[in-house]
Length: 110
Length: 122
Image (cartoon, rainbow over all chains, first blue to last red; front, side, top):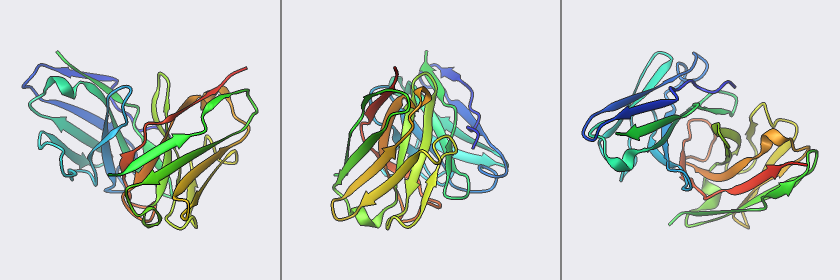
């Protein structure tokens, strides 16, 4: 149950796009299409952004999109806005009734 | 509106025990699996444990297996986490999380509580 690997930080100017990677193994990201992404503003509860690799819950803007290739999932935030500045975590089912989270990426809007 | 309210956190010495509780409302509690996820200071989110709708299936992170026990009471609409033999590395904000499905497999976390803080220190 090793944490999925995410870059510690990412940044972009308002209106730009940023993509965050989430690398695992064939036992988690590569083995299941059950990758989800969460946005966390410090002091608040995490919020679900993406589930099942690319699906968006109602209420989540279309600026947030997800994808996966082999053992790496990605979250793209398009048209960056100031309120997108937060920590982002991926998560994936890892078999045997277990889950694993990513190491987290701090997104800064310049 | 889904509400998850955690309680039971606090300061405990290494080797001590705590029992966390989560009161759920706003959804049919017994229809969904539930989880505990913790936010470790300076590190990030870590999945701790999950339980199926009936309580018949559970899963634990390797770091807590054998020390923590997850349980639920569908009549009281409550989720619990019994934590024994606590270690300083267990210091974290513990979130109660509703899963999207009755089973652990394939579910994602669609609602989170505000968390309860556990500090393990002498």
